[in-house]
Figure 1: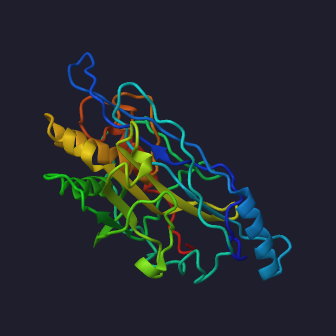
Figure 2: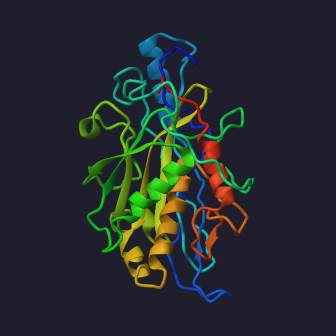
Figure 3: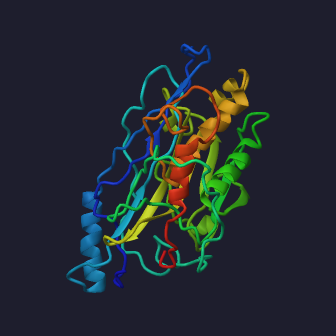
Length: 327
């Protein structure tokens, strides 16, 4: 791990933000409306900002090699019910440029709450399967995930949560926690609104730590990325030094509250809403879409039976991410 001061990313391609389409009713051969999902993996290049940070860092630190480049970008997430459409490309969001070190304006002190060993033990999938993929991988091919050695804090903006849906997010998080071994800690309600430019470090709001995962019940008016055929979006920010291993440090997930309220009136509405949230959270954790229709991460949900063997095996692999005292 480079001992030099971390810097902003140079804009190398990374897994982009994943958007999903809004539900429109279509009855397939099975008679049950199906939900279709679509992935967006485009990226916003930050070359000009990165170059400015590059030069500034060299001036401040007197390092002609400008070691310690920081890789800070949003990863994907999301679920789209729809009538055979995929999500339209949207730009990703990059972190702010500037030198990062210690208690700088861009990153918290490293190692907060990081233990020497994973905090939880993931459930071993009962059936093996390779029907999974990852949204981001390191240079050695290992998937990018959250450190299993520190808790993942989360907050919920539930001002618009539909009636009867209050327990859906906690239940889905419990499912994901069992599958990954990640220990989630609920930090309570928040009034923070979703933003495509959300800073991963907000000391004024959350103290000297990475901002918690933000889960928002919201509307397309507040979260424009939910307009059109979009029911939810999500993502995680990963961070690395130079070309070292990446790790997710925070994320966000947005749910279209009016659309889900409408869907909850349908038969099996809670099951489908749960499938949406599980699909989104799986993207936040690092899973990609797959071509296997038996998996929840397939771009269509016919019968909402929850995480399948491939999904569970993929989440289990994500549980093997290394501890990161350096972040």
